[in-house]
Image 1 (spheres, helix red, strand yellow):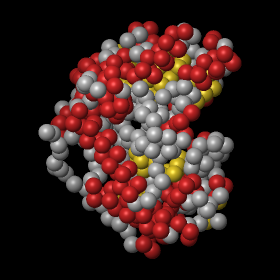
Image 2 (spheres, rainbow, N blue to C red):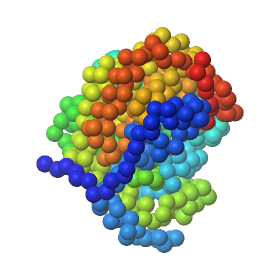
Image 3 (spheres, rainbow, N blue to C red):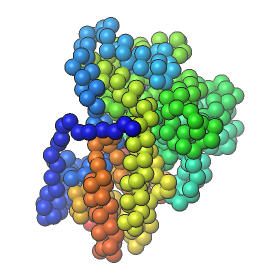
Image 4 (cartoon, rainbow, N blue to C red):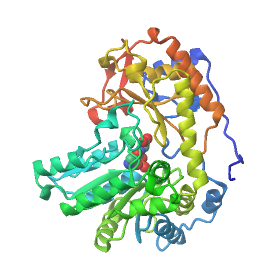
Length: 446
Ligand code: F0G
């Protein structure tokens, strides 16, 4: 048996109700504008918000800050080789930095890029190269009640349709995102990864895995894919990532650090090209925008992420949080994903028309009622798409405990009891780029 005990604590407080009301109003009903000191349980994201282990903190102290040839880079290289199976690593300041390096190298104007579902920054980086991002989720991905094991899978049918439509020459890259963050953090089977590898071979494309949550995905594979029931998390992760030509990684998720990322590959040519671009945008290729100490902590975090006890505690903790919410009467996306539980705001606040942003209204109520911060991933964040009105409650790694999750569940229960009183919202001001409006737009009650 392995578990954790706490060595350092951080005080959190719940502001009085009137203060929360004022905070919401001053934030323009956009919780990105709240000060985190005013948030009691912060479930905005699982990215860079987790707690590092004592071993990671120890690694910070021995980080090598040399501009070139840093020992910490050697540690990262060897962790990536052992855990993910790639010989070459190009570090970056975080996932989107790595996306810029990789997609800037692989893509050009007019390309079309299939992905099970593009995360926002992936979509933006593909588009930034003049290429067109195309989502290929399986049909059940956006059905909150379908209880299938791998709702994050890449639809090969859609991928092939796309290639038939635009021609293979326009599709130089195929991406698979594990787990599928934009489809409620749902996992991808190894079988599906094998099929995507074949698909990429058929059209002579580079196969990239966005590996942000690769360890959580490996845990689901062990639980749900019969072939892997007796395999270790480390072996599953190694096998799944091994089908890709390159991985793009945000260390802020399953790297268990607060900042950092990288591209990894076995392809020597691709490595050289990425390295050159990284020098331009990130930094010298043995630190890539990170401090040496952060590189050192990431090397340790990657190894910890595939320890069974860690990842079982992590994913089962999220599942139990989902159970608490369901018991509180909340309609949730089933089954919960690896890093978050998603509330179906369309079902919870069915009296609110879609144009009054039921998801964002629910986000605001959770803060008003219990100082809880989640994030809307429905029609406010993704205008002009027909996604369900979801609210993501993302769980930072190794940070919150059962009493925090109980507080959130009680908050949700109270909000649902008063649901008829919840008012919708309308936009008061909007920035120029609609793709990222949810970070800064302001709203007001209808
Ligand atoms: N890819 C995926 C699947 C992600 O979820 C993220 C970040 C990135 C790439 C970019 O990584 O933040 O290190 O630059 N997702 C965070 C989230 C922000 O809240 O889901 P980054």
